[in-house]
Image (tube, rainbow, N blue to C red):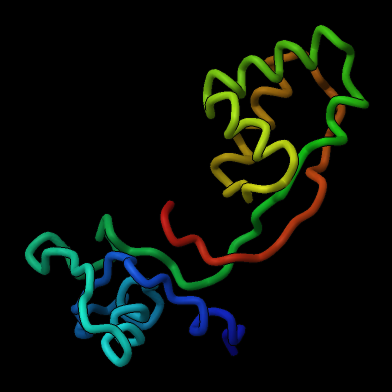
Length: 145
């Protein structure tokens, strides 16, 4: 049984797909959102139906199963040498930008699995060998990746 939050958190201007006949439709956020938004919204942001492949290779497919996001890594600095932290921070500022780096560090912005991998890679590049955990974890829908 799917968690209830899957169907109660549809984004208002989310690009949706109208292909209910697609074999992936039952698990695609874009199709599930289309059905939900069709009931309530006057205008929809529709993906061009000719651009959807209607199979597992569809580039617009988004799985409706929640994935594990991470929030914050304020504890990393305490467990690193100053030079390591400086290199780590500079690598991530170059990737995310200064303010977005600090938003992610404080936990204001959830880190997708892709972003978690970027942070963990920066740890290794900075010379950190011990395993570090993010401040907290939460399950969420992956609307964009």
